[in-house]
Image 1: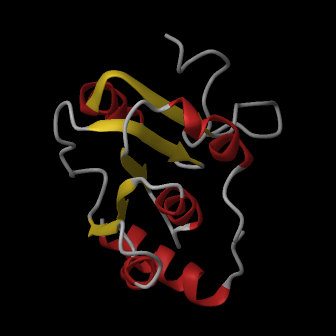
Image 2 (image 1 turned 90 degrees about the vertical axis):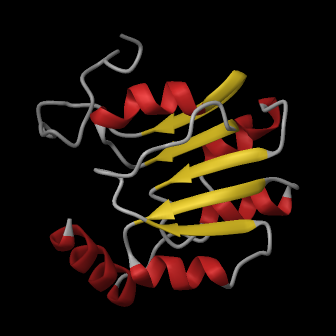
Length: 146
């Protein structure tokens, strides 16, 4: 969606984003039994770069041209993919590890399950709905489990 691309391009140009990988990625990446990883909505690449530095080959997907240009500079093991995750089709049975950090597209969940190899690992971090935060961008409690 063009609106999302424009929004994220502008945000990446003017805002500061964390440089360190997500704590949950650092804590659990080692559980993956192989070296093929997918970083959904990879942004500027903090998690992709961390995985690449650990020896993973990372497909880093994002809608932002700005993010993709940044990803191209980070590490030779990172394959930047410019795509809208509302329409992008994940390949079947390809990845040992999938990251979904601070991004929520419920329609992708069945594809995420299919793109993971047998015994593949999904690291998923997002926000839960509360009285203060109630929108389609937040999960209901235990929603992902179901």
